[in-house]
Structure formats: C-alpha cells, structure tokens
Length: 247
Image 1 (spheres, one colour):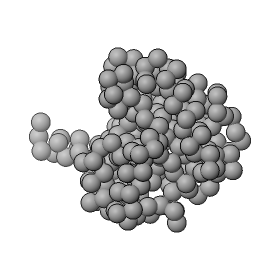
Image 2 (cartoon, rainbow, N blue to C red):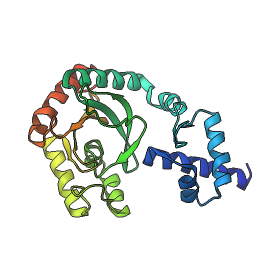
Image 3 (cartoon, rainbow, N blue to C red):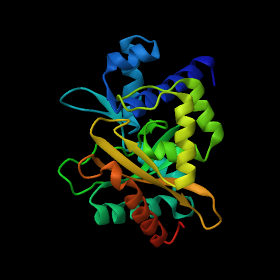
C-alpha cells in the first residue's frame, strides 16, 4: 500500500470519527476538520457512501453515519451473542421503564452505544445508536470510566470539554465522581451532556465478574429526576439479571 493510500484510509477513518462525534455534518465542515479541499472531502465521502458507511440527507445535504457500520459492528459485538442480548435487554428495559434504553461499551475515553430501544415518552432523547458519547459527561461513560483507571486518566489528560453548565470539567471533581460511582454501583448524569436530559447507568457484568458494558436509561428530567436515580438503578440491576447473560 502506498503512502497516499494510507493517508486516504487515515482520512476516511477520521471522517467517520467526526460524524460519530457530531451526529451529522456538512461537506465543508468535514473538509475543514480534515484539513483538505472540499472536492477531496466530497470524493472521500462519496466513496464511503458507496459502501454504506455514510449516507447523506437528501433535503439538508448533511452527512451522517450509514447503516453499513451497524453490520460491521455486529460482526464484532455478536461474539457469544452479545449484540442480540444487548438489544433484547434494551427492548425489555424500554418497555418496563418507558425511557430510552442503551447498552454501551468503552472505546478509549468514550462510550459507544451498540444497542438502543426508544422509550414511550413524547420527548424521547436523540438517536444514540453507534454514536461515541463523552465519557465524563454521560452516565454510561462515567460508569465505564469508573472501572477503567487508565481510560479515566486519559480523559482528564486530554481536557474535559464543557457541554452544559453542569458538566464536570475539573479532573479532581471527576475523580471524586468516579469514586462515588464505584461505591454505590451506578452512575448518573444530571443535565451534564444535554440540557433537560438525565440518565442512569448500571454495570453489565458476566458471571465471572468481568465488566462487559453499561446499561443506561435516558429521559427528560421531569420523568427521570435525580432524586429517583438510586431507585431506577436498582430496577435496572434486576432487569439486567433477568436477561440471563449478566449478573
């Protein structure tokens, strides 16, 4: 493979990372972040679209991740039935709680949602499937960082981005928060990533104790108030145990 080919692969991966971070973006914004001309970005994105890895909104022209990535992700996460079990659990949790449910895994310092089921509420949160979400600002991210000291240290070293007035951006406060997560066994996000949105996460452990993922419910603050986080976490733990895969 030539150096030019390697550079093209690097840019393709970077473009996918940009869309995973932003959800959707225009050609000019992607080109600017890649440091290339708009025409080069267009060719790159068109090639990715040909393989189903991205698609483009016909109305607004914004690019977003394509469903081809779900197929590739399934090839990784379906080992030992993980993907199917995660989706089944999300469906069960969304049905029982009425909130949007996600199962997420740790990717460096971010939480990546690999399964989701929408809640029944009129104000269900955004579609998170396949998205990388900030570890320090989300309940799933904090849960996963709490049990991965190296990842938590890396997150603090890179700088903690502020998303709302409630986001934890002080490394010492994040350390204290992660210690609290370990003590109580669950994590919460109180409007820390998005205004008016709260979330609760619990660990999904295999029978041997290995932490495999985080189970999260997300909803508007009026239906998922912080004062009920502990009660909701207990309910999630019961539902996770009923799945037959996690304890």
